[in-house]
Amino acid sequence: MSFKICLLPGDGIGPEVTAAAVSVLERAAAQHHFAFTTSEHPIGGVALRTSGLPFPDATRQAVLAADAVLLGAVGAPEFDREPPVRKPETGLLQLRQALGGFANLRPVLRYPNAGSTPLKDEIVTGADFIVVRELTGGIYFGQPRGFAPGRQSAHNTMVYSVEEIERVARIAFSLAAERRGKLTSVDKANVLEVSQLWRETVIHVAADYPGVKLDHLYIDNAAMQILLRPRDFDVLLTGNLFGDILSDEAGVLAGSLGLLPSASIGGRVGLYEPVHGSAPDLAGQDVSNPLGAILSAALLLRYSLRQPAAAQAIEAAVARTLADGLRTRDIAGGGASLGCRAMTAAVIARL
Ligand code: IPM
Ligand code: MG
Image (cartoon, rainbow, N blue to C red; front, top):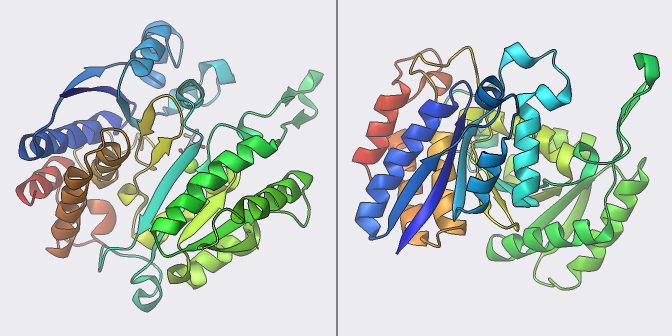
């Protein structure tokens, strides 16, 4: 049995963290008796430079023919002033739509003493929740959108259908049922009709999951509560924009955005990407944190290749690496740190 993994290293630190994840996957495959082949394709800024498009057709065909897709990061400052069709981020959004993974799982785990955080240890220790972010709808894709002639105003549309809310809610409820049985749905139902429909629909779906305790928070309050009492949360269900915001904030709880992985499931092919961006200022210096990408590879094994033992082994190796005090610069708090390659070797040595 040999799986096809499509690699999209992308921009900035994307290539180095992707290479790190692949070397960990190679070791895991040898240990757990499965095989995979990889192919590499451009997306984002690298694709724009060579083909003028952020998500070229050849890349689209390759991802749709794969068993799973592993992405590094997209984004490059040289395109900041370009129109949307010439932005690396547009390539990522087109990729997500092509694959159709509407449920973006972003686990947030505070490893014991994982790194410096401005938050008190007694508050963050033991935090372990997962953000389920709707990924292919909402204000990111809603129509109409655009600038009025003369650019004196601009508009976007936050829209969700009952069907879109239901399908992502079911994934969140199922996850909660396997975890600690708590689901917090995040909305802005005190102001937005789209959030009122979100809340009604989630309450309706809850009837099928009697073992899960459901509550609701407004997004502004949720942003505060996850910092005040992070341990109380198990699964957080959000729309596209609210989940984008909460997951960066959650990076502070974990110790660094560089530690957070993600999986986008429910579509034709699973997409796995670290939550961090391309960090162009760090690119090529071997100082990035590979753990977000390595943990994304573990999610790839769990959700797309159905290799739960290998996934768990990688997660355990990462936990041991951190427990042994090894740090990349983002989590070293000014102390001694390893580069991306040495940190990856440390994880492999513990696998
Ligand atoms: C993320 C990123 C992307 C998003 C950007 C790069 C388009 O911030 O994955 O969280 O907004 O979804
Ligand atoms: Mg984001």
